Length: 502
Image (cartoon, rainbow, N blue to C red):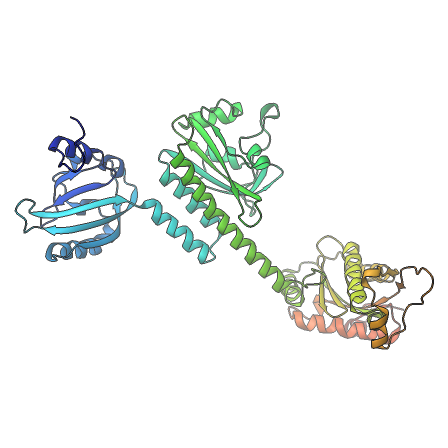
């Protein structure tokens, strides 16, 4: 058989050969849905040859839950003379797995040459999974769900493969990975306790210092194709071969906005060899979906952080402070204290040197206070020059006094004002503030401030976190009236005779 000349009708043998290898399935149904003629690559799609499909009813391949819609569609196709526009439906493969197909049909029952419904079907499972990925991204779904969907998408486009999507690299390892977990996947994402709430981390360096195949991809951003596994660490080779895999491909995931490597798609193949151009394109598209999701996640994290943190000092704000305090009071097994700090002399710094200088003082003081706290304590900027500290799990109430003394000491240290923070002479004149002397080099101005601190304890209020902060605030004002740069316990605790601040 030879190919017919252009513009001539091909002979039957040519048409039969083309139809046998067509990437789509073309079939004819009788009026009750029985397949009377089938051509195309049904073996790849359904797992059944065209010859073995003849005599089967189309409904045999429809999941039970989809039968009502399938019956309605078939009824429409039988009684309508208009072409049945493209419609997606789920179908059951010979191995029991579920795929998604797109079908179009035309009613030719009245044509004596055909006497049936002509149906064209092709698999669109990968497109359906892509839609689910995009819906997950648009809906702000969990990243872990999106990663599993992308892994499934890659496996759909690359049959006989296992895909693992790993993200958030750090020092040659990943923080998060998703796939169905078996021993091979554990080699890829091992190193974390299964009961740990944190995502899985990557395996450590293999035998003889040989790294896993994804480490060099993280380092230089170039894909690696291990066509025969011989270049992998011996333990990994053995495990992969025990599960029937013969090749490993590792593709990087880049963030479009920065070009940074944010992960890898790792594909274990049951056949040796390198990926074809089409397979590379399929995985590249999947990696772009992951990148989109990661950029959306990062944007959401930035928004959440901005809503819960102070823009100047990056400390938690009042909202986050209250949330943490409420949790600590609910689960407190040991004393919990709140310290309310107000900076003495800060207003005069702002008035004399300007708000840039004031901002510098606030950032410096915030850093000093943070460095002086215990691990687990929370420092927040409550507004202006006021800060709050949550001290959970105190061994004894007296420990809160020690923390207050330490904070008073670090805040009282002088703060140098860099030249870039100082107000110009012209602005100082406009503000009615004294300008720095001229005519000789000036040293950086130094300001000295102090902190007045109020202390209150959780056992004074039960679980009323707002009331606890109010008590600490009132104690802070008592400290200011007594002497600036001091601390004071809440009046309720003083009245109970539980502390002597003299």
